[in-house]
Amino acid sequence: MVICRCWSAMLVFNPYIVAHPYWCQRRRDRASIRSESCKEEHMSTEKRVNIGMIGAGWWANTMHMPALAACEQANVVAVCDLLPERAEALAKKYSIPHTFTDYKELLASGLCEAVVVAITNNAHYPVTMDVLNRGLHAICEKPLALNYAQASEMAATAQKKGVITCVPFTYRYMPSARYLKQLIDEGYLGQPYHLQMRYYAGFARDPGTYLWRFDRKIAGSGALADIGSHFLHVAEWFYGEIEAVSAQLSALVKRPPNPQGQTYEQADDTAMVMLRFKNGAQGLVHASAIAYEKTYEDKGYGFDQVHEWDFHGSDGTLRQVIDWDFRQQITGDRPGDGPERQLTVPDRFWGDARRERVIETWEDVFRKQGFMVGEFVRSVANGQPMVPNFSDGARVQQLLDAAIESAETGCWVKTEPRAS
Image (cartoon, rainbow, N blue to C red; front, side, top):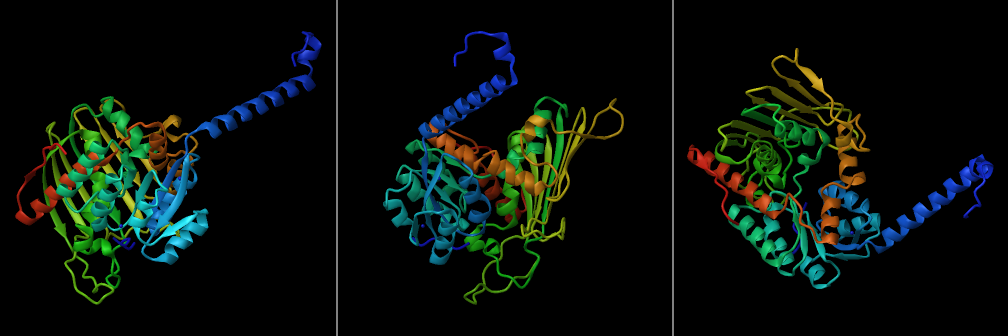
């Protein structure tokens, strides 16, 4: 993805008549008509939110626009990208009326009350600060910024302006993750002892391909920020505050010059972060973008990944494996329960999401069910805050900064939350 420049009937009672199949069906039909009428009337009175899309790259096409298109209250009115052909292609696909190549012109147009920022990491801070200073609501992709100083300023500005914000930490929304959260909160583990979270992906294995996500000037950090940030966020969601980290970051694949033929400082393609929680528990997050994980027949998604989570405590063990193909399973083991067994995620966590393939569950959670992006739109429409927001994004940025410092110094680095 590139940087945007400068950067939606009364019957008289008669038992025979009332019970006759014809009249029963008539009543059902009329009830259905009234229900649909009420639904249409309700929909017509719901506030729609005018949204601008800054960035028209792969993730805008894969996540944000399909989710916005599925949300009845979202009205995407403009899209901006430095490459006009990308903006125009997205606009044509989703019938978006306005296109821009300069995000400042989009903001100045007055078309939008909320903006989605899905561009390169180094542009998050300047673009989103302009969005916030105009009093507009914002989704900004993770990592929120290049460093904690930038991220904390973004969070403070959002709070000062009273706008609703969102950072897309997607994994907390998956049915199995929400069920794990309930089990841990209800005491399945007892006292938490430790956790291990492994994010193995292979999208950076090719040594012949330049990827901006591994250009430190643009990305800030590589696998740590791009995929490790997800698991640092949910680690605190599950176990509470992380008080210190110790990290090792490595750039193991030698990459080619950038498209301009220039060399650059490579960002990490694998990251290992040890965690010390305030409650005394230990943790380890391992994020790799160079692991060979061919998990299913290629259907064009490019999600060849495996995620493995292990949780241990005084009373038991929980494990989750998700491979983006057919495995999204949780197993549990506690003394007295017999052999380790697979735990069934209750129906209420699934809703109407498909269950067979993980990628289909993912699509349904964020499109059909409207988690995260749809939730953001509804929050803007109703004036209600949501999480994860920019304060959550700034907290993760603080953890990322601490991990980078630890890798550079070889020391543990404290990570007490600081006021934004």
